[in-house]
Length: 114
Image (cartoon, rainbow, N blue to C red; front, side, top):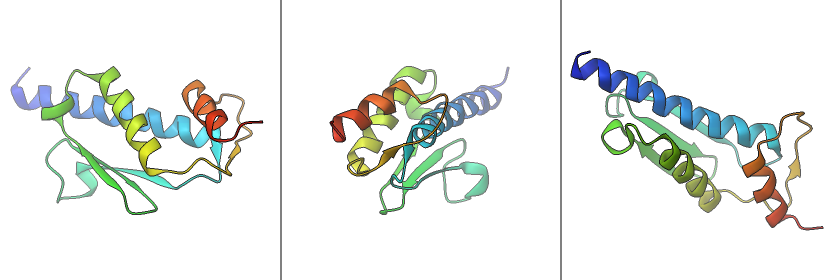
């Protein structure tokens, strides 16, 4: 595999990890801050194989292959932590999903006790 092919595959993995975190959030939290992921293919201002995560309140983070290739668990943990810093779960409700994400269910419970 060429270096560019390896970088492409790493970029695909980054997209999948971030997508998984956002899907878990959307399946578990109703009425929460809107969050979107934009891959480099849809935004020419992004570095090649990077993904931008944005929130409706204007927060933004860019995750690149150079930083996160091969670090799926660390990336998942970082994206979750970043989201918790930039969204507000207070006053949201649990979505009526049959498959809520355990991480987001626990985070929701912390912000909405009782």
